[in-house]
Image (tube, rainbow over all chains, first blue to last red; front, side, top):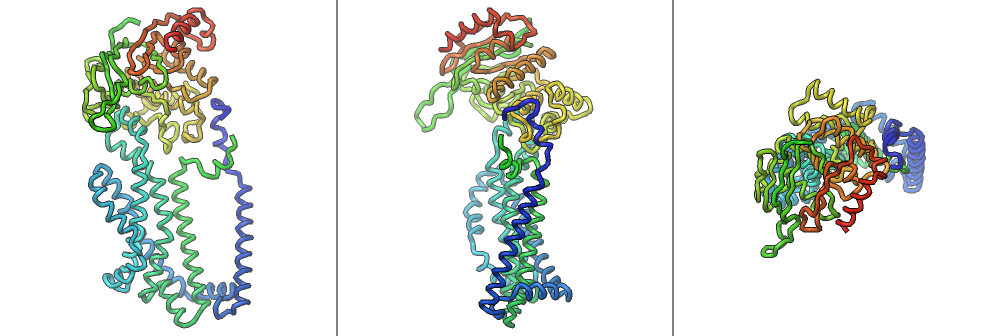
Length: 276
Length: 265
């Protein structure tokens, strides 16, 4: 901050340099190639019965896409994950705001929330199937239950991290309680909500797949279970690749939404590059 | 310079709640009295930890006094009950704090418009007022920058005009230029004087910097060590408009500086 007045903000107009991103991509490609080589090595060593070959997985993947089987199962899993994510995430993000002016209620709820957060979700899956049947409802319930507590606690910490100096500033300017909630408490908590969503996202896919593994007649988890019973290692690998791809897309979507909504924040990359 | 007192502080006292029941916490402010005329630029000098910020908090009603009286025109601040406070007294008292307290998720312009927005006074006229203030302090071209993209000095300017834009009759300033380098500070001081010459608002400006207090004020109060009370008062007769750069060499500045210097050490 040596040139505070005239040139201080000029660096902000410069877009992030493209070169490091390209280098990063090339390095990622290299790591991918290394992993595939390692995978191929394991296949040769242990045999295709135990470890499916990369090529076999790839062809199995495209065959599954072509005949529609993979997409059909994946669509069920994605639907369960997305609906469960929304049903769990939205109330979880809203509840701490509703409870903000009720510290007693928050304190009363706390041990139950901690209990729900800590409950082993895998062990709950059979219970949800018992209650909601083997269709999509039980999977949605498990995903929603898992997502809810993660997002609840991260939103709560966002509200607790409120900068009271900003609130005081707004009150001096005659802002009422609603203005404070809308213009200060909420935007301040958004980064924390996103932290929760980012952590919860893979859990929502994972939760759906696990519930399907236990009991279902559709979905990627069901497909894995079915293929395992048929000793179809390649088929399992293909289903796992699809699951991973879905997590990638989900992660990318959350990150894109976050980048857009939190563009007011200095990015971690620009902090590393800033040398002054 | 004539005019009745717009703000009056009488026998003000403040102590914070004791940490443990039964124990008495020390007085931060005790028996502090002064008044400010309408349109006056009053500066207050006090050493660090002398309760300057607490004094401004009591005037702005973001904190509650333990005794005495703070009166703005005819309104008297409540004592003892923090819930009865009216921060800013319904836009009557602006408060520029030590930290710029810009909202990080709002652009520079949106921050300046923030008070107008919550006050429901955002229209073409107030918008153009905001624009002209942004130009006056050299922030033009940075309207759409977020606070983290602005320098420390620019954030101070944004914070300053955010209060000027809604035009409160009294403005409290708590070492607003404390955290910037000396060169930027001189520019900011000059900017502040220029803006003040335009409108002659009533300003209470708190600082630990004696030179700043003399350069800016019509009158300066020197606070004692805690518990704070007014130790002495000096009228600053250096004519306006002032130039903060050359004022330091004036003989009346030097003699006043030395007098005050002797009082605070």
